[in-house]
Length: 90
Picture (cartoon, rainbow, N blue to C red):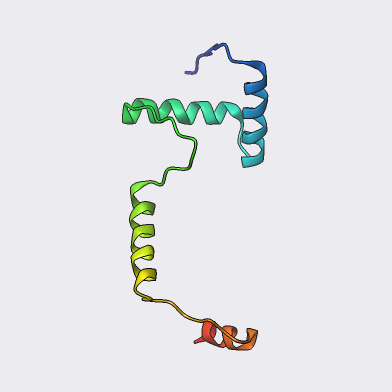
């Protein structure tokens, strides 16, 4: 069973939120529902003005950064497109 939640929000903020949700291909209702679900399950609120990676993505990024510092798993640079495609095909 569903229920209605009524909140007060600045008109311009609502408009901007709807625009961003539309760009992402979701409804503002879906955005709000997802945030409430996360709030209930994780019992925390995060305020950020930049993307926050989940632990799995953070671990993968840290590994890639460490490898790049030691030139591990790095290919190139390539002098020609043919050389690059040949590297991809190998």
